[in-house]
Image 1: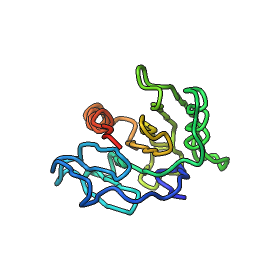
Image 2: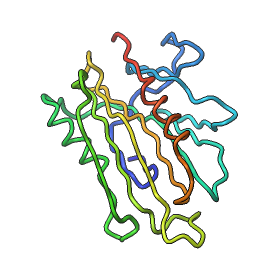
Image 3: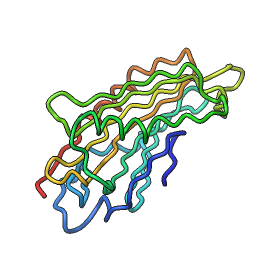
Image 4: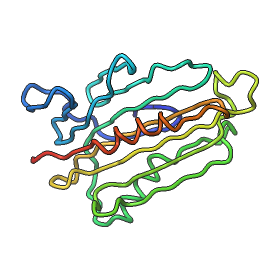
Amino acid sequence: MIKFPAIIISLAVAPGFVSAQVPCPAERICSTLGFSFEAPVEPAWRTEFGSSVIQFQRVLDPSRATMHAGAIEGRTASLYGTGEELVAKVRGLKSRWGSDGRYRNIRESFEVEAGLVTCVRYKMAAEDTQARSRGAQPFLPLLSVGRFCLHPQDRRNAVDLYYSIRSSPDYDITKLVAEGEALLSSLKFSSQ
């Protein structure tokens, strides 16, 4: 199990994101499971690689905003025959806000992407009442957006590509959302 910004993901660990056996353009990060995406550009981002996880942290003033992005890949335990089954699985993986009262005014959306039944786009927002960087604010808005996709040619291969932003209530996150959306839209599938 891998914990990331209060959202827990559980997938079997897979071979890894970067491999000499997988030809990959310099501007992309490629997976041995058939996924690739454009890497956020440093020095604005810090990158940390794991065997089946890549995490990115946007360099920002943490008293105003924090932004994380990442990708988790793995093999699913079963196949999902319909979009509704995949939505239910992703909702079960992502919708874990806890019962300690940290998050309030929770809003969630999970839907199959138009024209791509192997992907679920999700968006979750809440008020984080226990964020360490909230200062005198009663809460910090939290936004988490992602794409959970099964590879169209091998539906046991999965990737969760996401970003999350936590900011002071008066901080304009428009440019950060645009960066996150560029990351999500860069996801591509290669032949297996």
